[in-house]
Length: 286
Image (cartoon, rainbow, N blue to C red; front, side, top):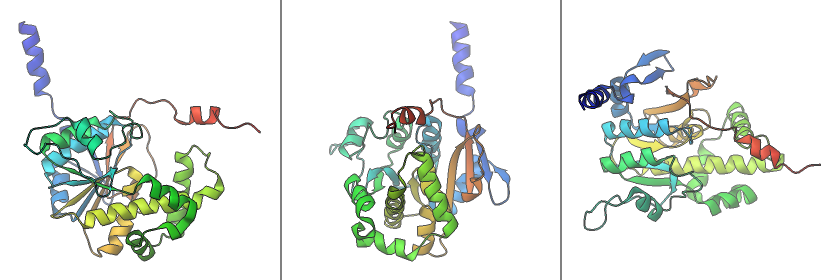
């Protein structure tokens, strides 16, 4: 019994994952503490927190970071615009996180639930609602098929005001091809590129509509990078805004794109199979 009690006390004394954070300021190539990053976040107008979707470490760390930052709400890629989680019912009684997400339109299969459970459990405990920032699937499909004519005016305007440089456009296309394991037909690339930019425009406009500072976004790393993501649109919509974009990366996969974020938070990798193996196996022959 004494041994078990000692072990419990030892575990409780271990530092929070945030205390061992591996955070890099990409402008100065200097290491930051969590307190440093929180101070910068509280001074910013917009705080964009990336993720690798299937890495649960990213979801847990961001939930803890947001709880300390304590914004009034967060904009999330995982819900469509016009939807928001309600962690408590009309009587003030707490609800299950899964039920609250389902009511808000969360796609459990599409987001491989419960991988994101640490994130939304943390938001629910902190009482911070998640507000949808994404476009709907049907609109995304229409944009891919029909091109710019399918864009609603609220998305077309910010996109027209922040065209991508050639290098950024090429990087976006390369990332789209990579995320589809090289199986994306060339004719679909322009439509997919436009749909990605439409998602970014939707999240940028949702951030602008968020009261208080900083407005916080939770989205994939591709959406928060500075060459073709949400920061490009925010810079056009709110010139001079202080934007903190934090890419969450895995320490066994160093890349040459870390400079595209204002900060990089390195974590342990997730255990995963090669997602392209099945896609290649199912590729039509001939």
